[in-house]
Length: 243
Image (cartoon, rainbow, N blue to C red; front, side, top):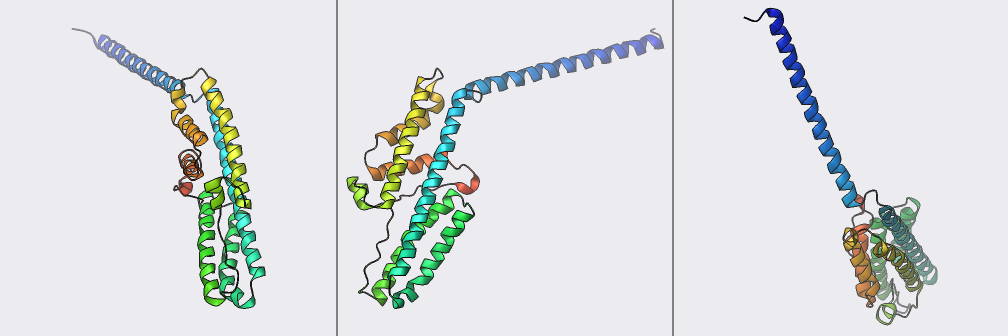
């Protein structure tokens, strides 16, 4: 019959063995997790230098889109300010509330750095308020010249003739976008990593570059913005047409 000291020694030895097994198991699990993470980093390109190029492209495109939108809002504000200075007193009374309200909203959006979605809504409001002003003009003073409120002109969309400030602004946006996307596309295609990692981005950039119909091209720009830019929850963008 084993002595009491022997029993204690045996139990102590068994505890050490169990503890050692648990430690070994934890080390194995940690090793597996680290290997999986390393494989994920490698497969997703998180540490890949090209990922930095893509992020820089995304950042620059967000700045380009926001700057273009801000400039467009400034132009809409100037148009409404000019309207208020050119119409007679009777018509001014009718349309001034619309003009003042819109100018106030644009000023707030620019001063408070509203997000892209909210600024884009103001461009839509510009067209809507312009239509309302035209109705008031027809009602109160039909002799006054019609309010012609539009963003990109039909001549630019249909014939590629840039006639307005908005046309020129949009044309500059297109040129800068094409230049930047061309540089990124060349870098991605010339890299050693598989193109599949950026297949969706490359495909969309190629579609934008090859599209000659400006109305369809604008929809592709919106798709690019919705898919890759302004990914905060408050800045989700619905596809809209600027024409």
